Length: 322
Image (cartoon, rainbow, N blue to C red):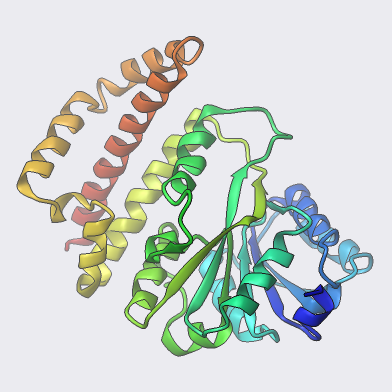
């Protein structure tokens, strides 16, 4: 079946929130100009979340040269979910695609999303594309832990659950979102899987289309990696406090206080070993290990990450008094 037979009109609205990443955003949008599907099959909406750099200039310039319809708007810095929710309502296509501004779609990425949505046309079906480290940027071990391990757990599987609702390369029917839920604008991390948990109650199914590949063009340093652990913890804490009826889903994400007592003791022991006072020593040791035993170094970094995440959860839950 040819692509012209698959779709004869606007099929996708691609939604991209952005903040202070003008140059990477340009790469992201130019990659979409190279897609193998007809540019009339998709439009792109970019939400500028109060950027202080030259983001608007990039958008104005690219609007005149890209072959697809490019729309954009600006707002004060309120977070990506405010943008996503606004853009979903603006979308003119039946299927919305969520990309990050550092997602570089390979030429057949949208083609594969399109093929899978035609194959699985039910309203409750979402399609997850694969995201992997961009080979054009310097190699960093932290991307392996933060990104590739997340996708590795789904390797070889087509049918995934709500925990794979990752908005860096994901397509969903617009009508399903409007009926059953948009993004929680108070959660700035784990917000995508939180929405996935709510949609799960209404029959969400995620099909993994590993053929739809995007590159993650974002260099992660050690500091960036540990900062993600804090965001991770804060997002889960807000979820825990604001949606107690969804704590069953948090248990599946190994939320500390919802785990069995034996697991909580295991976490407690880990937190003592990787206590903030000892953590600098573990990190120094992990840095030395990277040169001759990367696997062990990554395990240590992951242990530090989990300790920072649990530490942040405790602080946030206490701050939120829940």
